[in-house]
Amino acid sequence: MAVGYRLPVVELLPTAGEERVVGHLGPDVLGDDWDLDRAVANLRADSRREIGEALLDQRLLAGLGNVWRTEACFLAGVSPWTPVGEVADLPGLVRRAQAMVTAGARGGHQVTTGSTRPGEQHWVYGRAGRPCRRCGTLVRRLEQRRSTQNSPGRGSPGHAGGPGGRGPRSDVRRDQDRRTGARQDSYRRPADAGGPAGVTVDAGGRDDRVTTWCPACQPGPFPGLLAGRPEN
Image 1 (cartoon, rainbow, N blue to C red):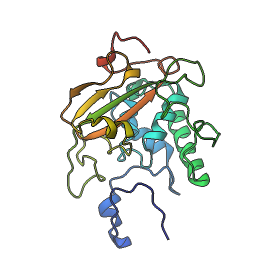
Image 2: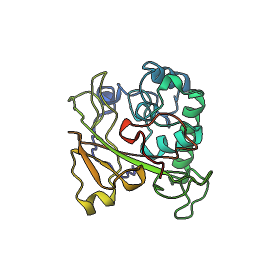
Image 3: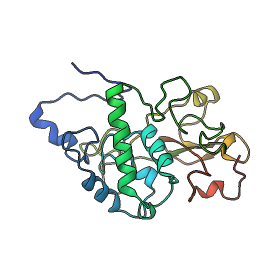
Image 4: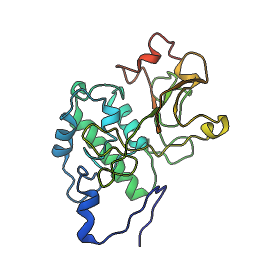
């Protein structure tokens, strides 16, 4: 028996053929052969890549989604746009992320705060425009839509197969997008990101990604589009 949640693609194949479709993946955070050192080495292979994006690249380490990478960056006090090579304690960040996923798998919930009460499960994920649980600064949200190129037989669904490919397609589809009719090929700046609300800039992409973070608890770089804008 298998249980799945939000599975955009399911491929059934003989065990002997698994290597063909998953052989490119990095260490599995829930695998019996989880290898922290290998995962960290994979991430460090491109020290200039943004940590938030690298954590979603299943070729480097497999199993992290948008919730886990968002919360892991917050708990590590790292801006998601920090280059991998500038993350002070990269092993600690990855170790924390793996521990959260493991706990979630055992408990059946994507909880990072320790509280399963509605509205209290996460530190910053899904809390844009609300006070940070630690410092009170308003949590910010940035929605980025990027181009992806799928290479049949390589990479995971929604993931570029080549070495320079982007991360996997995010599993986040905000209800707000459906209500406002946000285009699939756009980058939409939300009100809490600073500047005029609802400003949409064509980015020519199809890879939806929502990033939430606390600018006070996670100091560091952020997209140039937000430079010079107020924090809330």
